[in-house]
Image 1: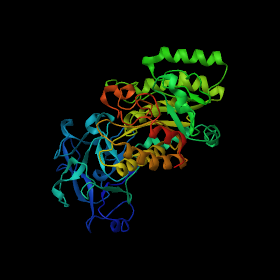
Image 2 (image 1 turned 120 degrees about the horizontal axis):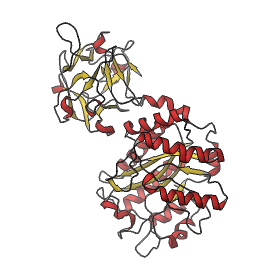
Image 3 (image 1 turned 30 degrees about the vertical axis):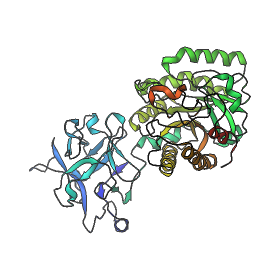
Image 4 (image 1 turned 90 degrees about the vertical axis):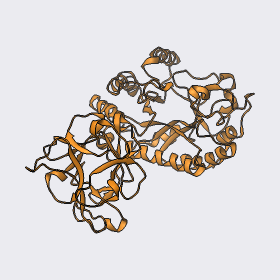
Length: 450
Protein backbone atom coordinates (compact mmCIF):
# COMPACT_ATOMS: atom_id res chain seq x y z
CA UNK A 1 0.00 0.00 0.00
CA UNK A 2 1.64 3.24 -1.12
CA UNK A 3 1.09 6.25 1.10
CA UNK A 4 1.73 9.60 -0.60
CA UNK A 5 2.32 11.50 2.68
CA UNK A 6 1.02 10.50 6.09
CA UNK A 7 -1.22 13.43 7.00
CA UNK A 8 -2.30 14.80 10.33
CA UNK A 9 -6.08 14.55 10.45
CA UNK A 10 -7.90 16.25 13.26
CA UNK A 11 -11.60 16.56 12.44
CA UNK A 12 -14.36 15.09 10.32
CA UNK A 13 -14.80 18.34 8.47
CA UNK A 14 -11.13 18.33 7.50
CA UNK A 15 -11.51 15.07 5.59
CA UNK A 16 -13.94 16.65 3.17
CA UNK A 17 -11.31 19.18 2.14
CA UNK A 18 -8.66 16.67 1.15
CA UNK A 19 -7.54 16.93 -2.46
CA UNK A 20 -5.64 13.98 -3.90
CA UNK A 21 -3.23 12.75 -1.30
CA UNK A 22 -3.02 16.02 0.63
CA UNK A 23 -5.03 16.58 3.78
CA UNK A 24 -5.84 19.53 5.99
CA UNK A 25 -5.31 19.88 9.70
CA UNK A 26 -7.10 22.77 11.40
CA UNK A 27 -6.71 24.90 8.29
CA UNK A 28 -3.05 23.90 8.25
CA UNK A 29 -1.47 21.56 5.75
CA UNK A 30 1.04 19.44 7.64
CA UNK A 31 2.57 16.07 6.83
CA UNK A 32 5.06 13.72 8.38
CA UNK A 33 8.44 14.69 7.01
CA UNK A 34 12.00 13.37 7.19
CA UNK A 35 14.18 16.39 7.91
CA UNK A 36 16.78 16.85 5.18
CA UNK A 37 20.43 17.81 5.52
CA UNK A 38 21.68 21.16 4.21
CA UNK A 39 22.33 19.44 0.89
CA UNK A 40 18.70 18.29 0.78
CA UNK A 41 19.64 14.70 1.44
CA UNK A 42 18.21 12.18 3.90
CA UNK A 43 20.60 10.91 6.55
CA UNK A 44 20.77 8.68 9.63
CA UNK A 45 19.26 10.38 12.66
CA UNK A 46 17.15 12.87 10.72
CA UNK A 47 14.24 13.96 12.96
CA UNK A 48 10.76 12.83 11.98
CA UNK A 49 8.92 16.11 11.97
CA UNK A 50 5.80 17.96 10.91
CA UNK A 51 6.16 20.12 7.82
CA UNK A 52 4.00 21.79 5.23
CA UNK A 53 2.78 19.12 2.82
CA UNK A 54 4.49 18.78 -0.53
CA UNK A 55 5.22 16.09 -3.09
CA UNK A 56 8.86 15.92 -2.04
CA UNK A 57 10.74 12.66 -1.64
CA UNK A 58 11.06 13.05 2.11
CA UNK A 59 7.27 12.97 2.47
CA UNK A 60 6.80 9.82 0.43
CA UNK A 61 5.97 7.01 2.88
CA UNK A 62 5.26 3.33 2.29
CA UNK A 63 4.00 0.73 4.78
CA UNK A 64 5.78 -2.58 4.22
CA UNK A 65 4.59 -6.12 4.87
CA UNK A 66 7.13 -6.56 7.64
CA UNK A 67 5.92 -3.55 9.64
CA UNK A 68 8.44 -0.94 8.48
CA UNK A 69 7.43 2.55 7.40
CA UNK A 70 9.82 3.42 4.59
CA UNK A 71 10.44 7.00 3.51
CA UNK A 72 11.79 8.12 0.15
CA UNK A 73 11.52 6.59 -3.28
CA UNK A 74 14.90 4.90 -2.90
CA UNK A 75 13.47 3.15 0.18
CA UNK A 76 16.70 3.35 2.15
CA UNK A 77 15.37 5.04 5.29
CA UNK A 78 12.70 4.00 7.79
CA UNK A 79 10.81 5.58 10.69
CA UNK A 80 12.90 4.60 13.72
CA UNK A 81 12.87 4.62 17.54
CA UNK A 82 16.43 5.70 18.51
CA UNK A 83 18.31 2.81 20.12
CA UNK A 84 15.02 0.92 20.38
CA UNK A 85 14.20 2.68 23.67
CA UNK A 86 10.47 3.37 23.83
CA UNK A 87 9.09 5.69 26.51
CA UNK A 88 6.85 8.73 26.82
CA UNK A 89 8.63 11.57 25.05
CA UNK A 90 11.11 9.51 23.02
CA UNK A 91 11.81 11.58 19.88
CA UNK A 92 11.53 9.76 16.56
CA UNK A 93 13.93 9.77 13.63
CA UNK A 94 14.55 8.27 10.23
CA UNK A 95 17.40 5.80 9.91
CA UNK A 96 18.69 3.34 7.35
CA UNK A 97 16.25 0.42 7.23
CA UNK A 98 17.46 -2.58 9.23
CA UNK A 99 14.29 -4.61 10.00
CA UNK A 100 14.99 -4.30 13.72
CA UNK A 101 12.33 -3.98 16.45
CA UNK A 102 12.98 -0.22 16.52
CA UNK A 103 11.46 -0.01 13.03
CA UNK A 104 8.25 -1.99 13.53
CA UNK A 105 4.89 -0.18 13.38
CA UNK A 106 1.18 -0.88 13.32
CA UNK A 107 -1.39 1.55 11.87
CA UNK A 108 -4.69 0.68 13.52
CA UNK A 109 -8.30 1.04 12.46
CA UNK A 110 -8.77 4.24 14.45
CA UNK A 111 -5.85 6.05 12.84
CA UNK A 112 -3.16 5.69 15.53
CA UNK A 113 0.34 4.46 14.62
CA UNK A 114 1.66 2.11 17.32
CA UNK A 115 5.24 1.10 17.90
CA UNK A 116 5.20 -2.72 17.53
CA UNK A 117 8.57 -4.21 18.56
CA UNK A 118 8.97 -7.98 18.18
CA UNK A 119 5.54 -8.24 16.59
CA UNK A 120 3.76 -7.02 19.74
CA UNK A 121 1.60 -3.92 19.36
CA UNK A 122 2.58 -1.58 22.20
CA UNK A 123 0.60 1.17 23.91
CA UNK A 124 3.07 3.79 22.64
CA UNK A 125 1.97 5.78 19.58
CA UNK A 126 3.44 8.41 17.26
CA UNK A 127 2.44 11.73 18.79
CA UNK A 128 2.74 15.47 18.05
CA UNK A 129 5.13 16.78 20.71
CA UNK A 130 3.63 19.34 23.10
CA UNK A 131 0.49 19.57 20.96
CA UNK A 132 2.47 21.96 18.71
CA UNK A 133 1.10 21.79 15.17
CA UNK A 134 3.77 23.72 13.29
CA UNK A 135 6.62 23.27 10.83
CA UNK A 136 9.59 21.63 12.51
CA UNK A 137 7.80 19.93 15.41
CA UNK A 138 9.57 16.63 16.00
CA UNK A 139 7.38 13.58 16.51
CA UNK A 140 7.60 11.58 19.71
CA UNK A 141 6.35 8.34 21.23
CA UNK A 142 3.64 8.77 23.83
CA UNK A 143 1.10 6.54 25.54
CA UNK A 144 -1.77 5.92 23.13
CA UNK A 145 -4.88 7.88 24.04
CA UNK A 146 -6.47 8.49 20.62
CA UNK A 147 -6.46 12.25 20.96
CA UNK A 148 -6.01 14.70 18.11
CA UNK A 149 -2.21 14.56 18.38
CA UNK A 150 -2.19 10.84 17.55
CA UNK A 151 -4.69 10.40 14.73
CA UNK A 152 -3.28 10.19 11.21
CA UNK A 153 -4.85 9.84 7.79
CA UNK A 154 -3.60 8.75 4.41
CA UNK A 155 -5.23 9.40 1.09
CA UNK A 156 -8.02 11.19 2.91
CA UNK A 157 -9.00 8.25 5.12
CA UNK A 158 -8.45 7.77 8.83
CA UNK A 159 -7.49 4.32 10.02
CA UNK A 160 -6.60 1.29 7.97
CA UNK A 161 -6.88 -2.48 8.19
CA UNK A 162 -4.15 -2.66 5.59
CA UNK A 163 -1.09 -2.06 7.75
CA UNK A 164 -0.57 -5.77 7.10
CA UNK A 165 -0.41 -5.57 3.31
CA UNK A 166 -0.05 -9.33 2.98
CA UNK A 167 -3.77 -9.31 3.80
CA UNK A 168 -4.36 -8.54 0.15
CA UNK A 169 -2.98 -11.99 -0.61
CA UNK A 170 -5.09 -13.87 1.94
CA UNK A 171 -8.06 -14.47 -0.42
CA UNK A 172 -5.71 -16.34 -2.76
CA UNK A 173 -5.26 -18.81 0.09
CA UNK A 174 -8.98 -19.38 0.66
CA UNK A 175 -10.40 -22.75 -0.34
CA UNK A 176 -12.70 -22.61 -3.36
CA UNK A 177 -15.38 -24.45 -1.40
CA UNK A 178 -17.11 -21.25 -0.28
CA UNK A 179 -18.86 -21.01 3.09
CA UNK A 180 -22.12 -22.93 2.63
CA UNK A 181 -20.54 -25.88 4.40
CA UNK A 182 -20.43 -23.87 7.63
CA UNK A 183 -24.19 -23.86 8.14
CA UNK A 184 -24.44 -27.45 6.96
CA UNK A 185 -21.90 -28.70 9.49
CA UNK A 186 -22.78 -26.28 12.27
CA UNK A 187 -26.54 -25.66 12.50
CA UNK A 188 -25.77 -24.25 15.95
CA UNK A 189 -22.49 -22.60 16.84
CA UNK A 190 -21.51 -23.46 20.40
CA UNK A 191 -18.57 -25.79 20.96
CA UNK A 192 -17.30 -27.39 24.13
CA UNK A 193 -13.57 -26.86 24.54
CA UNK A 194 -13.22 -29.83 26.85
CA UNK A 195 -10.87 -29.53 29.82
CA UNK A 196 -12.37 -31.58 32.63
CA UNK A 197 -13.06 -35.08 33.85
CA UNK A 198 -14.52 -37.00 30.91
CA UNK A 199 -17.12 -38.78 33.03
CA UNK A 200 -19.04 -35.50 33.33
CA UNK A 201 -19.04 -34.74 29.63
CA UNK A 202 -22.68 -35.63 29.04
CA UNK A 203 -23.75 -33.19 31.77
CA UNK A 204 -22.98 -30.46 29.23
CA UNK A 205 -23.09 -32.18 25.87
CA UNK A 206 -26.81 -32.98 26.14
CA UNK A 207 -27.73 -29.33 25.59
CA UNK A 208 -29.26 -28.70 22.11
CA UNK A 209 -27.09 -25.65 21.49
CA UNK A 210 -23.87 -27.69 21.71
CA UNK A 211 -22.74 -28.66 18.22
CA UNK A 212 -19.38 -30.30 18.82
CA UNK A 213 -16.22 -30.86 20.83
CA UNK A 214 -12.71 -29.45 20.65
CA UNK A 215 -10.18 -31.25 22.84
CA UNK A 216 -6.82 -29.69 21.80
CA UNK A 217 -4.24 -32.46 21.40
CA UNK A 218 -6.47 -35.12 22.96
CA UNK A 219 -8.93 -37.49 21.31
CA UNK A 220 -12.69 -37.67 21.24
CA UNK A 221 -14.55 -38.08 24.53
CA UNK A 222 -16.41 -41.35 25.05
CA UNK A 223 -20.11 -40.87 24.50
CA UNK A 224 -19.78 -37.85 22.26
CA UNK A 225 -22.33 -38.15 19.48
CA UNK A 226 -21.56 -34.75 18.00
CA UNK A 227 -18.68 -33.49 15.91
CA UNK A 228 -15.11 -33.79 17.18
CA UNK A 229 -12.60 -31.29 15.77
CA UNK A 230 -9.09 -32.79 15.96
CA UNK A 231 -6.18 -30.40 16.40
CA UNK A 232 -2.47 -30.74 15.75
CA UNK A 233 -1.51 -28.83 18.89
CA UNK A 234 2.13 -28.23 17.91
CA UNK A 235 5.50 -29.86 17.60
CA UNK A 236 6.05 -30.28 21.35
CA UNK A 237 3.08 -32.67 21.33
CA UNK A 238 3.74 -34.37 18.02
CA UNK A 239 3.49 -37.77 19.70
CA UNK A 240 -0.12 -37.01 20.65
CA UNK A 241 -0.92 -35.97 17.09
CA UNK A 242 0.46 -39.28 15.90
CA UNK A 243 -1.93 -41.01 18.32
CA UNK A 244 -4.84 -39.00 16.93
CA UNK A 245 -3.85 -39.93 13.39
CA UNK A 246 -3.78 -43.60 14.35
CA UNK A 247 -7.25 -43.31 15.90
CA UNK A 248 -8.60 -41.54 12.82
CA UNK A 249 -7.18 -44.23 10.54
CA UNK A 250 -8.63 -47.00 12.68
CA UNK A 251 -12.08 -45.38 12.71
CA UNK A 252 -12.21 -45.20 8.94
CA UNK A 253 -13.97 -41.82 9.26
CA UNK A 254 -12.59 -38.63 7.78
CA UNK A 255 -12.91 -35.70 10.23
CA UNK A 256 -15.08 -32.98 8.65
CA UNK A 257 -12.88 -30.25 10.16
CA UNK A 258 -9.23 -30.21 11.25
CA UNK A 259 -7.71 -27.43 13.36
CA UNK A 260 -4.16 -26.17 13.01
CA UNK A 261 -1.80 -25.25 15.85
CA UNK A 262 -2.64 -23.98 19.34
CA UNK A 263 -1.27 -20.42 19.70
CA UNK A 264 1.94 -20.92 17.71
CA UNK A 265 2.42 -17.13 17.85
CA UNK A 266 2.89 -17.09 21.63
CA UNK A 267 6.31 -18.01 22.91
CA UNK A 268 6.69 -20.84 25.39
CA UNK A 269 6.72 -19.25 28.82
CA UNK A 270 4.59 -16.31 27.68
CA UNK A 271 1.52 -18.28 28.73
CA UNK A 272 3.19 -21.10 30.71
CA UNK A 273 3.34 -24.28 28.63
CA UNK A 274 -0.12 -23.73 27.17
CA UNK A 275 1.05 -22.29 23.83
CA UNK A 276 2.79 -24.09 20.98
CA UNK A 277 5.37 -21.33 20.40
CA UNK A 278 6.65 -22.28 16.93
CA UNK A 279 8.85 -20.39 14.46
CA UNK A 280 6.39 -18.95 11.88
CA UNK A 281 8.22 -20.24 8.81
CA UNK A 282 8.69 -23.70 10.26
CA UNK A 283 5.08 -23.74 11.49
CA UNK A 284 3.84 -23.03 7.96
CA UNK A 285 5.91 -25.90 6.58
CA UNK A 286 4.59 -28.33 9.21
CA UNK A 287 1.01 -27.18 8.59
CA UNK A 288 1.36 -27.80 4.87
CA UNK A 289 2.93 -31.24 5.28
CA UNK A 290 0.98 -32.62 8.25
CA UNK A 291 -2.45 -31.03 7.81
CA UNK A 292 -3.02 -29.52 4.37
CA UNK A 293 -1.43 -32.29 2.32
CA UNK A 294 -2.98 -35.07 4.41
CA UNK A 295 -6.55 -33.90 4.97
CA UNK A 296 -7.32 -31.62 2.02
CA UNK A 297 -7.38 -34.54 -0.47
CA UNK A 298 -9.77 -36.37 1.89
CA UNK A 299 -12.26 -33.51 1.82
CA UNK A 300 -11.71 -32.15 5.35
CA UNK A 301 -12.12 -28.43 5.94
CA UNK A 302 -8.81 -26.95 7.07
CA UNK A 303 -8.86 -24.27 9.76
CA UNK A 304 -5.83 -22.06 10.29
CA UNK A 305 -3.94 -21.71 13.57
CA UNK A 306 -5.79 -20.79 16.73
CA UNK A 307 -4.07 -17.44 17.14
CA UNK A 308 -3.24 -16.39 20.69
CA UNK A 309 -3.21 -12.74 19.63
CA UNK A 310 -4.84 -11.39 16.49
CA UNK A 311 -2.72 -8.25 17.07
CA UNK A 312 0.53 -10.16 16.48
CA UNK A 313 0.76 -9.03 12.87
CA UNK A 314 4.47 -9.67 12.46
CA UNK A 315 4.15 -13.37 13.26
CA UNK A 316 0.89 -13.83 11.36
CA UNK A 317 2.28 -12.14 8.26
CA UNK A 318 5.35 -14.37 8.27
CA UNK A 319 3.29 -17.54 8.71
CA UNK A 320 0.74 -16.59 6.08
CA UNK A 321 3.37 -15.40 3.65
CA UNK A 322 5.29 -18.67 3.91
CA UNK A 323 2.09 -20.69 3.74
CA UNK A 324 1.08 -18.85 0.60
CA UNK A 325 4.37 -19.76 -1.06
CA UNK A 326 3.80 -23.40 -0.13
CA UNK A 327 0.27 -23.43 -1.55
CA UNK A 328 -1.79 -23.63 1.64
CA UNK A 329 -5.54 -23.09 1.48
CA UNK A 330 -7.83 -22.27 4.40
CA UNK A 331 -11.55 -22.74 4.97
CA UNK A 332 -11.59 -20.86 8.27
CA UNK A 333 -9.29 -19.23 10.80
CA UNK A 334 -8.87 -19.78 14.54
CA UNK A 335 -8.97 -17.21 17.31
CA UNK A 336 -8.48 -17.17 21.08
CA UNK A 337 -9.64 -14.25 23.21
CA UNK A 338 -9.35 -13.53 26.93
CA UNK A 339 -11.11 -10.49 28.30
CA UNK A 340 -11.25 -8.54 31.55
CA UNK A 341 -14.33 -7.50 33.50
CA UNK A 342 -12.55 -4.68 35.32
CA UNK A 343 -14.24 -2.01 33.18
CA UNK A 344 -17.66 -3.60 33.25
CA UNK A 345 -19.81 -5.78 31.03
CA UNK A 346 -20.37 -3.36 28.16
CA UNK A 347 -16.64 -2.70 27.81
CA UNK A 348 -15.94 -6.45 27.70
CA UNK A 349 -18.68 -6.96 25.11
CA UNK A 350 -17.38 -4.08 22.98
CA UNK A 351 -13.82 -5.40 23.13
CA UNK A 352 -14.95 -8.89 22.10
CA UNK A 353 -16.96 -7.69 19.11
CA UNK A 354 -14.19 -5.35 17.96
CA UNK A 355 -11.66 -8.18 18.05
CA UNK A 356 -13.94 -10.49 16.07
CA UNK A 357 -14.55 -7.78 13.48
CA UNK A 358 -10.82 -7.13 13.15
CA UNK A 359 -10.04 -10.82 12.73
CA UNK A 360 -12.67 -11.23 10.05
CA UNK A 361 -11.50 -8.10 8.23
CA UNK A 362 -7.97 -9.52 8.27
CA UNK A 363 -8.72 -13.02 6.96
CA UNK A 364 -12.18 -12.78 5.40
CA UNK A 365 -12.78 -16.33 6.56
CA UNK A 366 -15.30 -17.89 8.98
CA UNK A 367 -13.83 -17.69 12.48
CA UNK A 368 -13.42 -20.64 14.83
CA UNK A 369 -13.26 -19.07 18.28
CA UNK A 370 -12.14 -22.08 20.27
CA UNK A 371 -11.27 -20.16 23.44
CA UNK A 372 -13.22 -17.18 24.75
CA UNK A 373 -12.67 -16.52 28.43
CA UNK A 374 -11.84 -14.09 31.19
CA UNK A 375 -8.66 -13.43 33.13
CA UNK A 376 -8.43 -13.97 36.85
CA UNK A 377 -6.93 -10.50 37.28
CA UNK A 378 -9.95 -8.91 35.58
CA UNK A 379 -12.45 -10.24 38.14
CA UNK A 380 -16.17 -10.55 37.43
CA UNK A 381 -19.31 -11.72 39.20
CA UNK A 382 -21.84 -14.39 38.19
CA UNK A 383 -24.30 -11.64 37.30
CA UNK A 384 -21.76 -9.89 35.09
CA UNK A 385 -20.84 -13.09 33.29
CA UNK A 386 -24.51 -13.90 32.70
CA UNK A 387 -25.10 -10.46 31.20
CA UNK A 388 -21.95 -10.74 29.07
CA UNK A 389 -23.01 -14.16 27.76
CA UNK A 390 -26.43 -12.87 26.77
CA UNK A 391 -25.05 -9.88 24.87
CA UNK A 392 -22.06 -11.57 23.27
CA UNK A 393 -23.94 -14.80 22.63
CA UNK A 394 -26.59 -12.97 20.65
CA UNK A 395 -23.88 -11.42 18.45
CA UNK A 396 -21.80 -14.59 17.99
CA UNK A 397 -24.81 -16.80 17.28
CA UNK A 398 -26.10 -14.49 14.59
CA UNK A 399 -23.09 -13.16 12.71
CA UNK A 400 -21.97 -15.03 9.59
CA UNK A 401 -18.40 -14.03 10.45
CA UNK A 402 -18.26 -16.69 13.16
CA UNK A 403 -18.57 -20.41 12.38
CA UNK A 404 -18.37 -21.70 15.96
CA UNK A 405 -17.43 -20.35 19.38
CA UNK A 406 -16.51 -21.87 22.72
CA UNK A 407 -16.38 -20.33 26.17
CA UNK A 408 -13.26 -21.24 28.15
CA UNK A 409 -15.44 -22.31 31.05
CA UNK A 410 -15.24 -26.12 31.10
CA UNK A 411 -13.91 -26.14 34.64
CA UNK A 412 -15.14 -26.37 38.21
CA UNK A 413 -15.94 -23.10 39.89
CA UNK A 414 -13.24 -21.86 42.27
CA UNK A 415 -11.69 -25.30 42.35
CA UNK A 416 -8.57 -25.34 40.21
CA UNK A 417 -8.98 -27.25 36.98
CA UNK A 418 -7.38 -25.83 33.88
CA UNK A 419 -8.29 -22.37 35.16
CA UNK A 420 -5.41 -22.74 37.57
CA UNK A 421 -2.87 -22.60 34.72
CA UNK A 422 -0.38 -20.01 35.89
CA UNK A 423 -3.09 -18.08 37.69
CA UNK A 424 -4.24 -16.66 34.36
CA UNK A 425 -7.81 -17.82 33.86
CA UNK A 426 -10.80 -16.72 35.90
CA UNK A 427 -11.98 -19.75 37.89
CA UNK A 428 -15.33 -18.09 38.60
CA UNK A 429 -16.11 -18.28 34.87
CA UNK A 430 -17.15 -21.91 35.00
CA UNK A 431 -19.68 -24.44 33.71
CA UNK A 432 -19.36 -26.72 36.76
CA UNK A 433 -19.77 -26.24 40.47
CA UNK A 434 -17.32 -27.97 42.79
CA UNK A 435 -19.44 -31.14 42.81
CA UNK A 436 -19.69 -31.16 39.00
CA UNK A 437 -23.28 -30.00 38.94
CA UNK A 438 -23.87 -27.55 36.12
CA UNK A 439 -23.80 -23.81 36.91
CA UNK A 440 -26.33 -21.29 35.62
CA UNK A 441 -23.70 -20.19 33.10
CA UNK A 442 -23.43 -23.76 31.82
CA UNK A 443 -27.19 -24.16 31.46
CA UNK A 444 -27.51 -20.89 29.59
CA UNK A 445 -24.73 -21.92 27.24
CA UNK A 446 -26.35 -25.32 26.57
CA UNK A 447 -29.95 -24.24 26.22
CA UNK A 448 -30.58 -20.52 25.81
CA UNK A 449 -31.44 -18.60 22.67
CA UNK A 450 -30.25 -15.07 23.26
